[in-house]
Image (tube, rainbow, N blue to C red):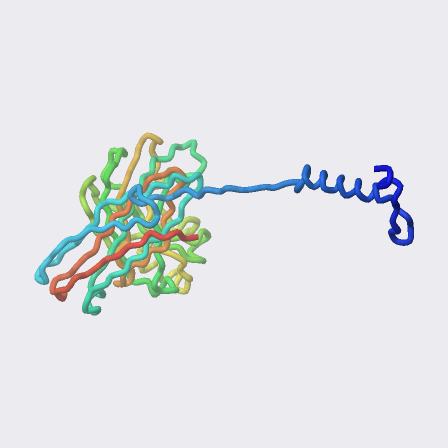
Length: 312
């Protein structure tokens, strides 16, 4: 040990004790053993299903079937599949419909309607916004034409499943959305419109005889609504952004609920293309796929596939 302490070596031109070098090495080894690194941060993130269709996970495939003959006109409906949003934020979804058949030349004769269940309550006089989510909901569709003047007609279907308002004149209604239609870019179909709509009855309507009010416009008001043709005459070159089927914004009480299964079938005699449905945070809706088969369909096997997709 004494020899080790007295022995010296030359380091960078200076004599340094071998014992000091050894001790520094031992200290370095000890420090490395005690502090291998200063920190390690590990994140473990589990993503749970936010929106469930029929209570199933995202890759679950549902199926249904029916039959008809070429001589009959028939509407084939799927079961009602629940849309359950368990997240704390809204879920924006779109329904993508595809028809396939073996001979590949008959699907253009079918029309598929995505029927969604929406529920709202009446708004009271003290509520600041009649269009808050609990009072007003909608399902949106793409417009097949860019200009309002080129929009000719549309058909929509609905069934009122619950109505606590004590009247039979409430129903879903069409809202045309386009930049420049009045101050707020919307034309709203007038409901009540003189019709009677009973709970549990399926209805199909178009824009024949429909009138519209344009919020903020001096001519097309709720007191003096305009015909659909007048709306197009007044704003012919408006660029359409979407066509909406809405429910609600009716005065009442928070305990009064109205629910309807509803969807647009055709726009300008073309298959309506879905744009977006909002399923609010913690809300439950439902989807029923309804496909119309006209008479004289070519005998074949037709597969209607509807995919529920997230959208912005």
